[in-house]
Length: 374
Image (cartoon, rainbow, N blue to C red):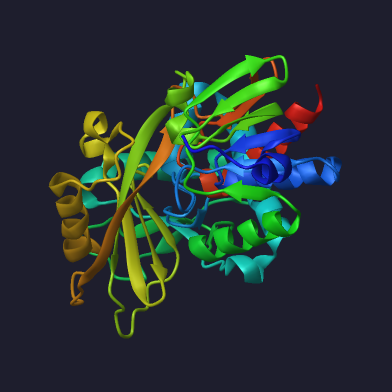
């Protein structure tokens, strides 16, 4: 560990009021909310990657609140009250993100969301059709109108049921543009971000919390963990990592597909972006292997994604794969985010369950409010 200068200690590392670990959507919104309530506070963010390291710059950019099959399954598992609260939180989070940056800074587009059912999922499809009106009535307090409707297979996907179950309330954003503009807003607010600097240890001390990194140690009065899929390294056992593998095609001339599409209870998802198709998912083919913080891709899942593209999504359209990548989500037994106090002067906002775009802004706000309340 190199010795730091007096100037470095004085201007960057001393008298830190709030330190945030993680510069994704949650961490950045937490910083903005802290700055709004504490305009003179010294706020810093520690980010282990050269860019946000988890899923915030790697996700598919869906502003979704849950496909109908996911909601039906969640009601059976968790009960109506819990699911209604979670859907409302997702919907509220999207509105907060849009209000924070504005639609142009997100490249927000509302082409709707559509659940597409493969032919082999006929029983699931029929169950969702049977529950359609009940689910709409159930979600009416959130959306003030029908949340789902039947739509024809207008994009000519093959091997699928004759109708989608669609939502007019779902949209999509440019994930990279969102994070660029959100980061600029946070930095303009006077928050310093230490990139490429992992936090290795956190220890309560007489000065709040001792923060250890490979480069230096410092103290902060309070620390907020916005580490989601990497939270186990800080002792948060209720959050497990979940890798999401993604691929994107090269531009396809004349591509007519527009919208945010779900398949197989949300385990597969695809969308249009820049005349390309972005497709991700298939974690349910190998849950154990995908419970990892490694950003690698596996042949099992990449081949499944390519097969789905060729057989169902673009069956009559030649395409080439341009890029593949992975993001790390944070999941657990429950689907509600965890926002709580951990120890003296330490707090967390984690376990977004693959819904970081929808939940991140709201979780960041709640994390800041909890930190400020004590």
